[in-house]
Image (cartoon, rainbow, N blue to C red; front, side):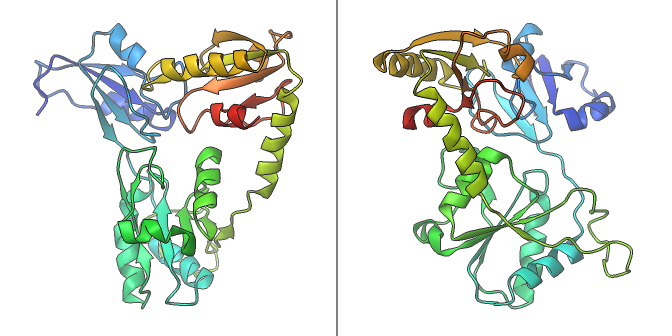
Length: 313
């Protein structure tokens, strides 16, 4: 029960239109709808919540589950529709061997379908399936998932089957942990959870093997440009994720020890037009949540890397 006075409803961009339907049966509790955020919509905007003196934040929609610093957070992930018959058909075509070791995961908005999907696959004879539960732990071996100890020790023997394409940072992390990775696409082809494919009108989506080699080469190319940059810019892309100040201090020290100068910027949502105003900066490093720190795009004039990549460089 919520025995508190002020609640901030933080909504992801995809769910902001539904915020007006939130009921307020208990008049002792006041709700404020935070329909936009200064940073990524996957993060909890504690700063905006504090502007209305909120006691707790209720975050709707997809989330990176990064630890917060000041306010308690209630997560409501919402759910996207998934055609289970189509997903099962795609899975069986991808893994004809019923004894294959498979780790089944999904984007957090599809997670509600995973238990039912896993049960159906086991009834078809699959004996080595693992479907980890969602936990709030971005630092775990599989980010934000609880993996059994026996599976965690042999994770390199498993093939990962992921419902919906993950963010780039998560894609690189997962691909480095498992033997192979397949992505089941969900864009524009899912209708209802019980819809049946095979009518000739809606083709069954096929799982695609993830290939991160091109992305890794592109990220490595960015690192090579930092070695000759005399001045680096540190972008603060969060004011809510815990320990971001410690990360900022560590980055400043690392850059100083390399004989370079650094300047710190707080610019809100990062885009190429904002960074183009600082022509003297030879490269950028982003301090943000673990998902939004990896920024891709052809419009940036100078390389934008994560703190980990800066340490490698």
